[in-house]
Image (cartoon, rainbow, N blue to C red; front, top):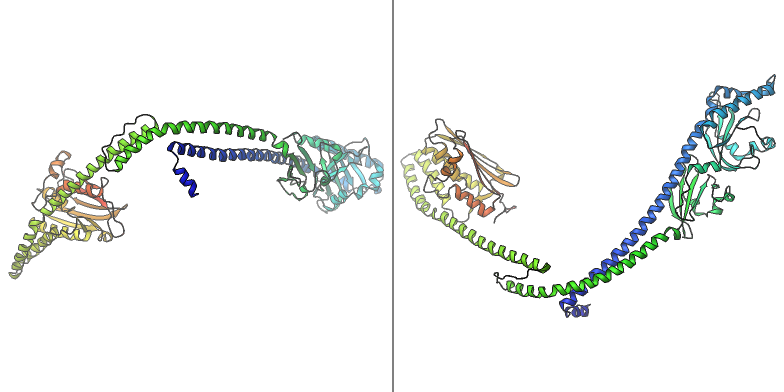
Length: 602
């Protein structure tokens, strides 16, 4: 493997591209071609097998539908009072037994012809047998009846005993020769039902409805999935009811088809033991008869194999053309790539003023993209430089505002102690608040302070303003305790409170109200300063917000916006809404900054 890597590394770029393209073409072609061929074979096999299964299902559904109708017809003797009376009669006790039997025979025959045969084309013949007199009390035709068979064998037939034992339940009877009313023992299937008195539950006899095997073929179409596809209908005893070869009718299915289907139950599909044929079976829920379709595998895939060979030849031709195309493309790419490589080496050495002069082809598009990228890099570097310069200027301005507070703070402490000694508590309280304000402004450790420190600073600042304006306004704080340990930039709220007091409460005839709210919402920290002052019109806003009321506050509203933008980005900032005579609301939105969430900073 190492030798192969070393040998590959010694190839020219052109050879590497040709080899790589060839690999990337050959391997997918093999995988895709093989996969498509396999999918095609599998899908066709599944489609044909599923069609065969569905055909079997439909045949069984047709059989069940027809049998359901015949089952309902077999109930007619129980529902007809005249037939029930005939089934109860004992002709040996009658005065004119032959005459009465003849009349009842005609009545039962008329019922069979008019109420049963008219409603089903499948029924070949009908026999109604009375147990008490051991005689046929009615039948569908009068042409022929084997009386010797009736007197000696008929009652001993297994299916007759099964009909009687079921006591009124229907009995599907598989293929058997019709010996009673047929000259040549025509194979039929039958539905039998015992005629039971509904009150005494006495078994009076039975009705037997014979279905011709030839007529069963009308329940399905002759679907041939391949030339030698075989179809069989097998009864509950696993004898063949229907086959294209009439000599197989009545034979054991295992002898004709094989033993595999014996183990198949319900609706299934599977291979025979010799692996050369597909066997599909569906079973009737009424009669337990089974529809079986056998499809030879070699015929099933003959057309599919032809298609697969055609696909393989086409793929090989396309493969050769693709390799030739890869050679042409590799040759066309090599030359401009060498030029691009030289230019990019200059960029890697720090020369961002490089211009790549390739304009044609895909490499030309890459060159244009790289040129645009270098321009954007140069622009971003310049912007970062300007932003950092502006940030340093703002921080220098804030530091300048902190030089005087150190001197003032020391001086005010002396005055405060003098006021305390002389008992001037009001002056002492005002000076205490003022020194706390000056002390807060003198902090230079960081641009960030906790919300609790900012709140203390604002409370001291508003207390000074209350002394100055003789309680002309009142202040309320609505601070979420959960945000007290969060951090924010210093001096964000003071300019807003200053504007509210100096401009909002100026010349108002009522007592002003100032509300400071700080809370977290949707992952951001919201700080709101709202007043009920005089407000201002939209055209006054720029002029009003540009004013500052004291030399200690030179940051201003514009400074607040700019600092937020520089530190946190344009999605955060300060928004002010005001209405003349309706007060002003200033809202600051900044990211949450705490020990777990560092916030977003530029």
